[in-house]
Length: 509
Image (cartoon, rainbow, N blue to C red; front, side, top):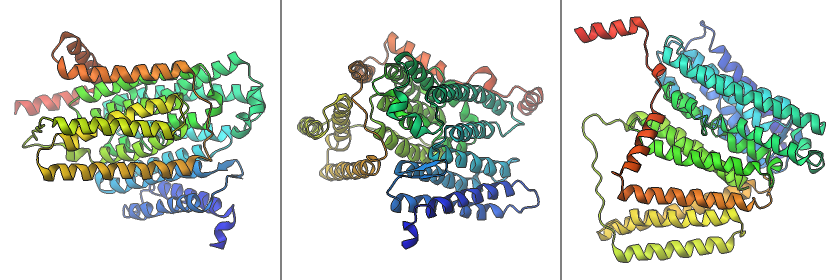
């Protein structure tokens, strides 16, 4: 235990173990190394994870370790990224066996996620740029690693163009900030004295450019196309995207949060992410392809995470990024089990009991009042109160009010109470963990709160109208638009002459 009291011990061991894991991945590229070494490689991946976990538990103070700034937020993000990388690579041992680029997948996955974790540990903007660039390059190569497949090359090229644009804009923002403030260290750049050197127009321009750089990898409208086409990649690659890559928007905005305090750029972010929430939810509802449903859900969830950032709730955005990343990565890895070949499941819904529905309305109202009364009375918590009340009512109807038997209602009540208990425990644990690492910003602009409420009410209204008027011309047009938006482009299909000739010959037989 005494050895953990040395503030430099765990960081030093962590970086050593991270280097060892990257070297282990590179060793796999050697043809003479047997494939059984992959099992040893997955064990080696556990070493930096254990170090990050120990640092999260025992290193309660923020420290500067060379060019790195290590606090609870940094260690949490490193643990999150590396854990998903370990799970995905362990899954790939059998899933990708037989692939031509089998070894390359593991090497690229290791390098990509290692660079990703280092980006969130860095206090030097130059290192952050390099690590984030390596992460985006690694993801581009992973999407197109099946070079013999034209579809994969097309998806990789599209992602690469979007990522290059995002990185160049981020580079321009970093150069602008460092030239204006005279510092390369992120903590110094974002200090009050440094930000005071920026004119209001200069701060707004930097914030707008930074938002564009953030929403591209987050697959927000109008840059969502790369994520839809990336479904061509192997499923584990889609899962590892949620290890601080596609959900990096909330992390980036949290790290640069002092730059956005009360700025009009928050309104722009809110509008773009709000539209992406509605669009992504629609794509999820109209698609029959399971992976595209998950992608539509990711677009919507990333939009909601950015809305949290626009309202100044950065700690909530980090919780969202971590929990949603783990949840969505799990869904992608389980995508194969979602396919049913023989029989379809018909879900029947019982009519809701009026008495139990009224009880649910009262319960949702009381919980909303209690949450609002015990929380800071700002715009974000007002919206959070409405979402909490609506979610409680919907969950109560599904789990309790729609059940007819006593056993069913008891089971529903038990599940409802258990979910509420787990939510409160997780929420409190994350808040206590992050409250010292994430700066609490001033209340967001009033216009941002009004827009967020408008988006929330529009979403609820569209959902209710869809149930009643789903066959109307209006919803038919929206359905066709969303379907066309989420369908693959013409270059998504394999069109090589030899491939078509083989298909025709097989059809002839």
